[in-house]
Length: 134
Length: 177
Image 1 (cartoon, rainbow over the protein chains, first blue to last red):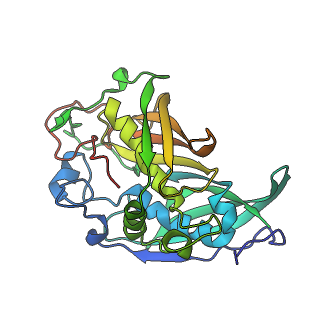
Image 2 (cartoon, helix red, strand yellow; image 1 turned 45 degrees about the vertical axis):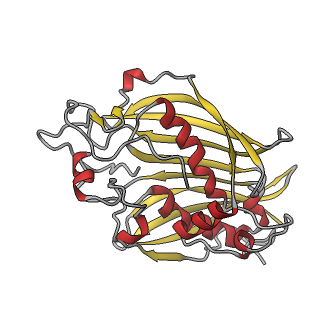
Image 3 (cartoon, chains in turn blue, red; image 1 turned 90 degrees about the horizontal axis):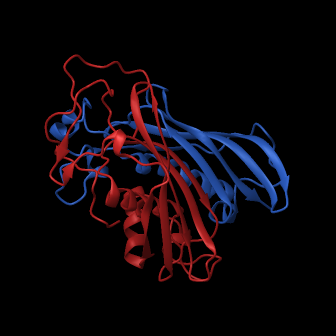
């Protein structure tokens, strides 16, 4: 059963989802990339290898699948901004809250603020997401 | 991408000029409205397994069965084909800055998706150069499966830095999950 329903109230906090990333999360074959190689990252001006944005954002997608169920797979929408680098050994947690309810022709849509924080509490990814609820 | 919006330029910093796949795309080369191409893309069961492993995103719907008569792919598998189409035209290593996505229909294994992408904007912000592109995927019935709009920053280093030297990583990626 999805976490969110048409009875969910504005202000409800979405379930948190956390991950302790490690360099192994970002290795692909033997490629030297800005995600795996210190020198490759430095040549691009980065102080250290950074996580791949989509893999970090996947924490939010898992959260949304849990929260909206079928309403994420069909009709789910998301807008994310990657504000700060996430490094390959960072701890991250996905959080969110229900912000608004919309009655539309396609059904009831709940709009949420979603974000990912690092261990220091910095919001490294911020955005909004919505899905249809039953 | 992850632009650090608080970072300051470092004296003597340069932007990568080229990598093993060729010269990096320059801001002035990017043409708003340019069609980045199109491709047919069939998600396989192995691709779904790989995507779930990459994201540690395991779900009965993705691995076994779903309300759509069989397993489906995690929606974020849609990240890659538009990125591949960008790479076919512009060598942008850069960093991912913004991701807009709309999941219209489930992505199912064995179904051929037709993906078309085009450049829709470019701009400068915080002394960095950005490219915006969008893509839409349709199924064999011409029904939309997903839409997306992406923003990449061309370089982590500010645009005032000259281009010099060779990068190890490239913006042109192998077309695989």
